[in-house]
Amino acid sequence: MNRNSGTFFFRVPRLFHLGVLGLLLSIGCADSAPHNGASSSSSNGSTARRKLVVAMVPKATTHEFWKSVRAGAVRGSKAADVELLWKGPLSENDREGQINVVQDFITRRVDGICLAPLDSRALVSVVQEAKGEKIPTLVFDSGLDDTSEIVSTVATDNFHGGEIAAREMGRLLEGKGNVLVLRYTPGSESTNQREDGFLHVLRGEFPEIAIVSEDEYAGATAESALDKSQQLLVKYGDKVQGIFTPCEHVTLGMLRALQERELAGKIKFLGFDSSPRLVDALRAGTVHGLVLQDPVRMAELAVITLAAHLRGEKVESRIATGESLVTRENMDSQAMQRLLKPETYED
Image (cartoon, rainbow, N blue to C red; front, side, top):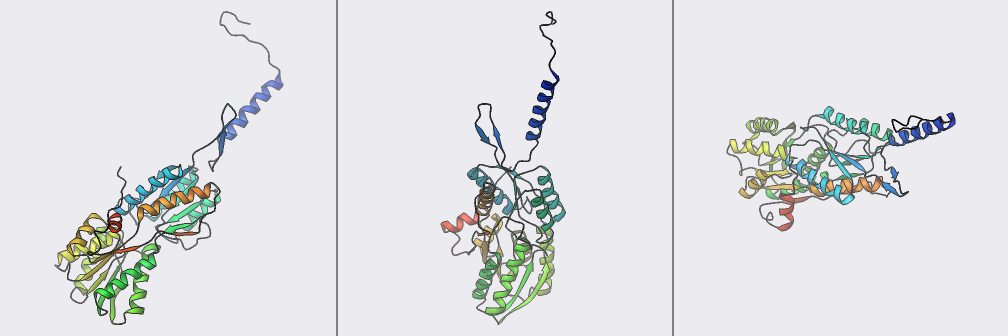
């Protein structure tokens, strides 16, 4: 015993050392366990449930649409009382980047993932990888070719949205004329459905409307959309009476091309989704209609639904979030104003 140092030394039986070592090892194992809704015990014996961690992976982070999606995700995380992690590729053509983001969240052992897949086929394997690590995935906005490994799909009925646009085009053209469709990009399930719905109705219900072009793709940016739009208008600008574009940046690219050739307002032009510039164009009559989704509600429901699943509740395999047609005539109604000017998240 060394009294000068204030410390007492004495021999401890070997069995006591082993018992302490075993206790420390068991604590270490408990701390390294994956999330997945684990509970922890406090010193007074009560059980505190750790906050669930939900990752949300959009198709991109720069377009106005995804800023509204993020706002909805934040709202949903508050309603469901979960921690939200947000990360996605900068542009909507970076499939490999999106896969890497999902794999990073798998490595970080999040409790669940909300994913807007850039490609309906390319993202299937990484969703399977997440499930193999007991991390469930909910898909929103766009679907996957294989839905067997996902919790649910929360999305607009995109095929129906295309049908709505086609019937409005038929009305505007009084059932006659030439129309072109500028597609978005191969592999994007949501926009493919919009394009297919539009073409299905035109062919089935308006036999006197001819589709002069339907196999050109705009690409992932407004600049590439402008370039392709310019090419199409050089070829068909004096031959078409109607144009349909399936998403925000493609609509913006085509609008700029029409304005450059002084055709804006002369050709009936329908798009999908909104932005401040498209709202102005709608009011000016250079865009004749937009099919609107509800990105805020979509993301909010995605987070809430995944959180419910993680807590053991039964959820629907598909949840539709609605689609509406806005025109110059109805754009000032309260319902349309909410969709035309959705909440956005700003860093």
